[in-house]
Amino acid sequence: MITVVGSINMDLVVSVDRAPNRGETLIGKTFHTNPGGKGANQAVSAARLDHLTNMVGHVGTDAFGTSLLNNLKEQNIRTNYVKRKEGPSGIANITVAGGDNSIIVVPGANFSWEAKEWEQYDDLITKSDVLVLQLEIPLEVVEAFAEMANKRGTTVILNPAPAHSLPASLIRNVDYITPNETECMEIFSMNAEEAVSHFPNKLIVTEGEKGAVYYDGSSLVRIPGFPVKAVDTTGAGDTFNGALATAIAEGQDLKKAVSFANAAASLSVQHYGAQNGMPEREAVLARLGEMN
Image 1 (spheres, one colour):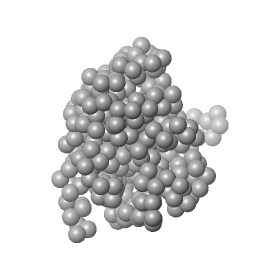
Image 2 (cartoon, helix red, strand yellow; image 1 turned 90 degrees about the vertical axis):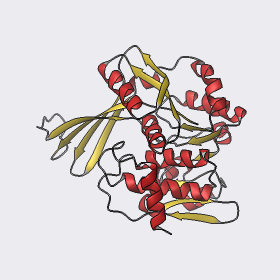
Image 3 (cartoon, rainbow, N blue to C red; image 1 turned 120 degrees about the vertical axis):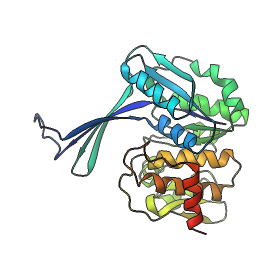
Image 4 (tube, rainbow, N blue to C red; image 1 turned 180 degrees about the horizontal axis):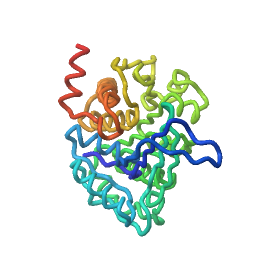
């Protein structure tokens, strides 16, 4: 069983020919909403791969909260632990212009955690095989869940995004840390190859189509990616983490688990939208078979 603790957002996506100048009003081209949030995305990834998945997080009492909750249920994710908090849900305001994205995240309900609220989830964490965390909820909440899981013997995956300095205690309490190349440099002030050597079998750095790299204690291990024509890389990292959690929960060794996650991520970038492109198990196994 996988439990994801993290953000649940509604993405508000506007496309425009170019970004507006300061004080300028432009006419946009398109607008649409997509369920998102790194926590919810990673839960969807795991659930699509036929693994029992719980979501722990907050949505607001607004219409977005209702839509976000319904979406999680439609994805076969257990929502018993998703609370509705008075006020707005979290949103990500995304402007797409000239092939680039600019994003403003307003956390809303994602930051409405009360003191020691996490203690009520002790039994759930104890029963879980893998706990997945990110950094779109308060850091103290992330630290509390990591410590709880560590004490209960539950494997912890921390996807440190958005990039944030990590307390030494948090690093000790997690089993795997999964930044991309940019996040790795921001957090550890080292490139991927140098950074992973300091955290054997713990730090796994994703490198897009090149795959991922980690250090096994004696040598650098590169797990190749799958060459594909990407149409939208949004959610690729979240797909990777949900798939990694699934493989680890099923008892795969780290090398096979990372390869499984790479295959899932490569499939996700062939479709538009973070959650839309997340693959089902059969597709991931077929892609792995292409390499054999």
